[in-house]
Every structure is written in C-alpha cells, then in structure tokens.
Image (cartoon, rainbow, N blue to C red; front, side, top):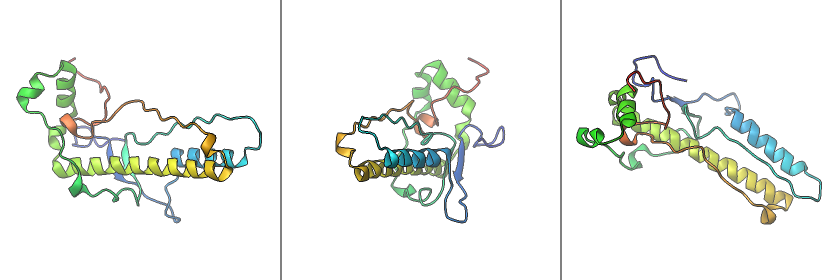
Length: 175
C-alpha cells in the first residue's frame, strides 16, 4: 500500500495505474459489490420495499485505479493546490504542522501531486459510473422513481492541499 520508508510516496499512498486482466478489467471489492447489488435488484421479486446498503472503498487510499479512469483526468486542467507558506503553517494546530512534517511531502513535486490528484479524481469517476449502473438497474426493474438513494462519506481528502494527502493520523513521534 505504501512506498519504501523514507521515500516520497511512503505517506502519499500513491500507487498509480492498476493492471487489468485479459478482459481489460481489474475486479476489485467494489466491482464485486456493485455487481452483486445489481444482481439483487434485478432478481428481487417481492412486492414490499427493500433496503440495500452498499459500502464502497473508493475513492480512498491507496490512490490507484485502472484504465480508462487513470488517464481520464487531464492533469493540465487540475485546479491549483492550496499551498501554505511557512508563516501560515506556523499558525495551524500542532497536529497539522506535525503531520505535514512527518509526511515528508516536500519531496513531492508538482507532477507527483498532479498524478496523485488525477488518480484520485479517476477513482471518483469510477464511483460515478458505479452509481449510474445501480440507477440503470433500478430503472430496468421499474422501481427507480420510488427509490430513495442516500450517499454518505467517512471523510474528505486533501489530495495535496496544505501539502497533505488523506486525512489520517500517522504515528507521530513528536505529538
């Protein structure tokens, strides 16, 4: 899941492009969960309402996705990252200052950050496609118009803003 200790990608969680099989697929836990959910929807034959909870891992570290998603985001069109000057960082809570220091993200250059951010957005794009497939199955079953769909997230992601990646607490030696 990580690069080598001390390397620029140790705390970035960036793995990049995933390999695909001979069918051009990388069947992840999320793919299996979405496919099973679609199967459940298509085969549901009762009159009473049903509830389906689908907990996806993406988008979430490690930052990795297969084609066509990996290169679907134009890295040249990404918005600028939010950067903190040393003075601005000094005003942040100690946990933020120490996370930035411990993550060693100053080793990452603009291209590294753009690749990580593009990969993350490719993962988001795949989740969008999952939702489309679920909605298509609900429409095909004829229950879409009577369905409530809720989205929940466990946390946001910095993806380079403030020189940080995912919101996580790494083992800090000084805090």
